[in-house]
Image (cartoon, rainbow, N blue to C red; front, side):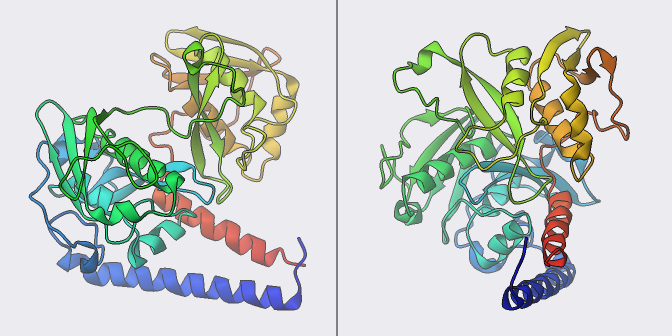
Length: 372
């Protein structure tokens, strides 16, 4: 890629500003750490906490199922949903203070603000809740999370922004094992729809994420099933985006891998997981181990800049979405394929914030250095 002298100067200046911003953020975080609020806001500015509801019920840290992955003493892992530049929702695992109110603290990181937007930008992503959104949350013993969002959400840009917000909130809350349904209130009142027609009545369960259009208007959705696939995103070579695809026939592991080999839809900006021309010979499952047999083109996966590690991670994540699959082996023309470095190990999380930040800075810096 070639750039003019002025463009080169602009990119170099951007890189310097990004590096300085990160240094300031880290220093500020260390300075603020002793004064971190006790409501689990992960060090976000006080201006973001416009309302302070009672602590979330039934969502103590020990109930999240994530405490065993704490990155450091006094922190716990939680899953935050952002969106990329094309509107795809992306789950990212982040560390927050190990305190009561984990769910509310997680949602607070999804609200647009200077601090949250900067944190999201370091991941190559964007926040999904509008600036000024307040969060009041209560969870019943039956597992229904009632979330009251302020009337700010009635002023979103368009229907897509509304739909992404609703889906992101549902996906985020149902990451917690104590939540199986979500009910919305807007400004303390029940509503049927948001401004652009997005439904918010009744209760919502965890459903398909980033559902692709079938492209066939005559096809009844009830006659199709779905598979969840993972493709590398555009903002970072290590970012993985979950996509739900409608398919005919059985939604089994064989179908999922076949669809993965087809790549993302023609209109999608996402990257291919498997090399071009790679075909699937067959899939066998025994004792929780899925063995995938590919054509010889699979060997080209090693030509990726990272040696194919992200693509293999996407492949494993796609397979292990199916109950009972605990491990994945790969064969090429019937011969075992050894990727090395445990790259076929089942990932604990889809995307990790620390790793994404490092990779995003690396790729942006590499793009600048590669200027001719």
